[in-house]
Length: 306
Image: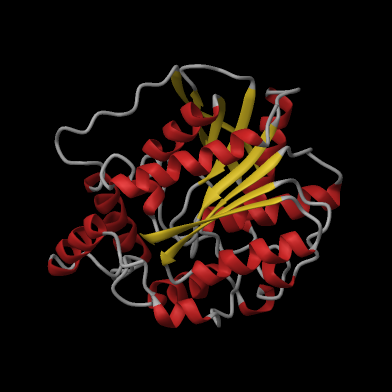
């Protein structure tokens, strides 16, 4: 398919305004830029947060000290729980940038969502963010016992979710009912064709991803199966929903990971998003096709849960 026309118009505006690439100067400057973009894409001054049962900010014990989380209770609680990891290349993003997404996940699944403000690189390179993810998974399992537990994330957060699912499998818990991987980064070598095909002009650039990996992942850790996911042993992982976007440098990362999960005997639902770009999950309510795809993805996760 061609690029969705609503995304085409939006990208043209972002390019004209110099808003792409995401990496702008230092990590701190790039975080401010990403935060500004995240707030702007919510639909302008008339934006109102999606109504939800309740929202609570708190801290939980983490390996590097108190770990901030935001807990979302859905409007209709179906007895499920999600640990959610935001995107941003392990360098950008926070609880606020992904607040609309986590609200949508909570209401779409009827699940309490624990959104994790994990430590960011370069101040805290790998494995800090993964250790925070594992601490949050264990805390969520302890505080919400008996609920089907989903680990979920987008982009870098999906990579953290997948790595945490591998570690949880190997450690014997916590037990996970499913994982939701939204355009995950699975290949630190960045050698898949989509990096070249979609590396310029589609919101996330190949240079952005290279910069993120350089800040986050020291060379001695690049073969760790928790990040080199395409070379990990995948048998025994929970049922998984993977969604990818056609015009995304990470498209092949997710497509190939879904295929390798299936080869390993894992139940996989793979939902490619034709005509869409990286980050589409944050554009529901702004881009019609993104909203439809988000609903389809969350429905697929719901089908895996009691």
